[in-house]
Length: 444
Image 1 (tube, rainbow, N blue to C red):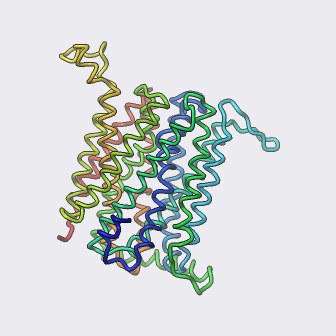
Image 2 (cartoon, rainbow, N blue to C red):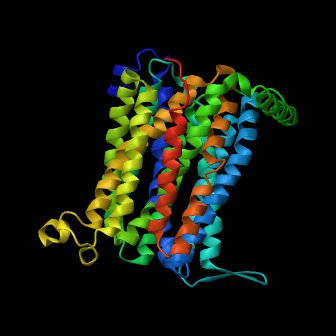
Image 3 (cartoon, one colour):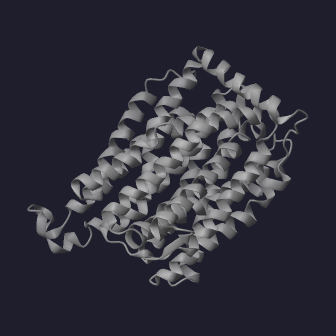
């Protein structure tokens, strides 16, 4: 709270900022433990028939989420704008994610679920349940993001956005530590308990946002709002030429966010490929969240000093470099190289796991400011009367092609028989995003 008192003196209601920021604290464990580090690794290595087919299936699940959000978020965003349904959609999305995350506990390797005359393998049903939970998570994020313009101005938007991201990573850090302390993660059954922890965490810590954050109440019928929403979307497309900077920015973000989505979806899986076990993955997650907290708070502050565009450029180049380190890490194997690193003492320091540690820490430090800065830049560019609708398109730009990265990652893994090949896709998407971002002419 001292941070808020010092930096947000101009806010009408500091409590509103706290209520809004706590949603990032509440939902971050889902991304950290379910998508990135634990359940994805559990699905690929334990539930699926084999790691290669598991990676391919996981990529398809991420793709289904991306397509669903990209198609529906503009409609729902416009509906929230015209009808005041934002809070209701936020609550519904949150509870869907909470309930289906809890259900992930019940999936075990080799188990068959019987529904009448239909038998479904555990790994297939688990993937369906995960996709539904993930869709709920993504829609909740869309509606939560749209509150940022209401709670900030151009002088403090970077601080507020960075504060929320930092608080979110702090939540991810605590949940990782709890998982490591409460469960024997070498035991597969204990790993499944993490799903229950995440669902309870999200349910409890989202309460302030869902019940105390203020919203405009609707006084008109649903059908009228739906009609207005469709007209609003049509109008936005028709007049899109008036918002060229927003369109160009969203296209650039489409690519670099796709790269981040792919990294988040396969981070724990790739760590397993490098040789990390569940304990090492949890420790890696803790270290990454610490670096993400530091990055979000520090670069969120400097964003308002040096400018969000310059700050985003720094994060994009460093993210590309971190993925390149992860790509070359498996090449550093003692019996496969024939230069100076053949020295065993040097190999103790320069080895695949250590290179991946450096890559992960750098990725963690930069990804929070990148996402926070992108969110704040979007809020700066968005007209006040279109905030929900444009944040729907913001989600659209992040999801419209975000199925491509995971699908290509899965394809490259299957084709070459190694998850390392999938990282080539991530590097390419970051590079394209950087080129397009720097082609945008932002006003100073």
